[in-house]
Image (cartoon, rainbow, N blue to C red; front, side, top):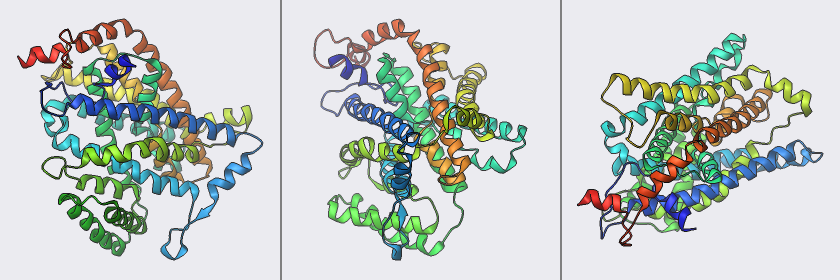
Length: 436
């Protein structure tokens, strides 16, 4: 237990910070967040596994009936099936938490200084551009031009899934490598949100979008002034979400925008408070439920599996995630280190970056969401996306585990140095030495 808490202490840190007495230790916040994400990632894996087994069992019609069950007021255009509620409604909570995290990173974290984070930021960009290019190349090469709208599916990394894999491995990743992974995930989330808002909005209704500014602005004013009563913020948030949904923009974008309105610094800072309240619900319920409804693809036996694995969409997704992610991330990092002043941390080897770049090929939550937006729910190509994401994520996790486990002895040594506390004052010696 103590080893697990110590190992989690630095996973999501934006850079190596000095620990100072009398202030909120960044590592404590990171440890708490990561514990939640690890559990959430394991729940996500379990929900996806249950859905996949159920959808290929004799009780598959029951799964389909639950997914397609319609619920909600027709008058407000919210008579949605359960799968859509999970993708549009529950994921808005997940993206609200993402918005809180992004806001904190931009204001008080590593991303507030782009020069310091340039290497992982540009690596993340490369890790999205190359998979998209590979997906397009595969589909064009197989003469499947009508499936190109799914180009963004392999660009996303699922950090909760990746953290769950790390939890299973028990790998003592050093702080510098965790920093690299965190920044990749943060930039990946930001770019994925932008892609959804810009490229996957089929139609735009300006009136609901303009009306959404009213409750959204009231929400922003309330949180900026320290008015955090749930009976005030919840209706404003729901109204903003419903109007954005009616506008044609994917409703999860509303969650991100509302998250960005929450202050990070000052007397009314509330990002920590809201994240503490909502992350367990997001990681423990919202994302697993979405995974349950999104991962239930009916394979159709061995012949159906073989046929699906030969489809352009499936091959494009697998190649994009398993090959495109490491090529984009590792290639961009190498070029920057070769031709600029950027360099790896002293604790890192290129094999470490390769392992993390493979880990970034685990695409799940956002990849499945983009797949539904690109091809629709229950369509053949939509099912091919699901299978491609599942297979690619399993391959990426296996390959990353092979690489990272081969470095575990080195990681344990670095971990002992990073967490040594000879005087038992709660401050790792390495940070205290730097502060002195």
